[in-house]
Length: 249
Length: 219
Image (cartoon, rainbow over all chains, first blue to last red; front, top):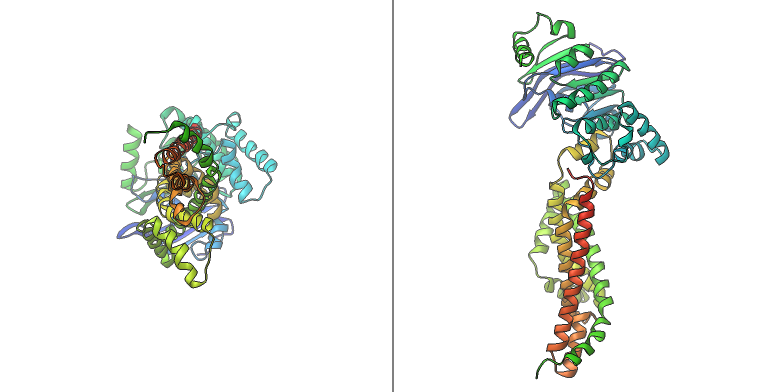
C-alpha cells in the first residue's frame, strides 16, 4: 500500500512501550492533506501518546511513521526538519511564562525561521489577529485567562506556517465558559483548510469539523469512521458505550 | 586595654582601601562559579560517560575544603611547572569550589521547570542551544534568584581565605594593621562590620531582583 502524495501522516503497525507497558498496539493511521481527524477515547487509551509520536516528541519501537514523506526516528536531522511541518497545541498551553504574548510568538520565527524582529512581529501580529487577541500582545501569559492563553498557543504554533496542526486535548484544562472561544478558533482554522489531528472529547466540535473520528482504547484503535457514521447508530460496541457515557452527562 | 573608637575609625580607611580587591575577587569568582556550575549541570544532564564524570567531579568538589583547593593550586601546581599569581589562584579556587554548590542550585532550578516547557520548545523546532538560552535559563534564574544570591554572599564572605595567599583583601589588611600595632580588636571588628554592610547590601539587591523577576510571568 503506497501512501498518496498528499498523505501528510502515514503510520503503519506502530508499537510503543513505556518499559513493560504496551501503550500503542499495531496502530495504522493516516491523515491526508486538508483532512481533520478527531481522536477520542478514555484516559490512558494512548491517544495523547499517538499524537505526540506524530511530531517526534515520543519515540516508538516498532512500525513505520512517515510525516510529510519523512520516516521519523531514523535521523535526528530529518526528524527535526519534518517536525517543522507541524504545529502543536498542548493541554496545559505551555506558553513561555517569562516572555510576552508577542515574545512567545516571535521566538521560533526569529531563532528557527531566521526572520528579523520586524518581520517576525508582523507575522505574529497577523496570527494574533486571527485568534482575536492582538490587544494582548504585550501581556504576559500569567495575565491572561486560560482560554486566552490557549488561543495564544494556537497563534504561536501557526507562526511557523505548519502544514498540519496537532491538538492534544486543547480544551481539557479550561473552564467551561472558555472552551467555546478556543473551539471557535479551531473551527475557523478548519474552515481555512488546515490539516488537523485533534485529541479531544468535544464531540460537538468533532461533529462540526471532523472528516473522520478515531476511537482508541487500551492502546488500540477500535473504531474509525466518518464523523457522520461515528455519531450514527453503527460502530464498535465499546465506542458506542463511550459516546453514550460522555454525551449523557 | 579597652576599645579605642578613634583607633578603630582610623583603621577603616586602610581596610576600605582593599574593598576594591575584595569586591573584584568576589565578583569574578561569582561569575566563574556560576559559569562553571551551569556548564557542569548541563553536561551532567546529557548523561553518558562525560555526564557521569562531571557528576562525580561535582560531588568531589563539594567534598573537599576550599583551603585544600587554594593550597593545591598555589603550592602544588608549581611543582608541575604551573605557576599562577595569588589573585588568579584565589579567583580560580573560589570559582571551582563554589561551582560544585552552584551546579546543585542550577539543578534544582532546572528541575522545577515544568516538562511542558522544553517540550513546547521542541515542538517549535528550537535547537537545543536556543532552548537552553531562551527558554530554560531565564526561567531557571527566576527559580533560583534567592539561593544564588545566598551563594554570592557566601563567596564574598569566603574572600578572607585568600589572606593565606597574601591577596591584599580586606581581612588581610586588617591583620596587617593588627600585627603592626598589636591591637586586634578594632581592625578585625571594623573589617567584620564592613563585610556585614556589603553582605546586607547584596542581599537587598538580590531581594529586589527577585521581586522584579517574579513580577512578570508568575505561573
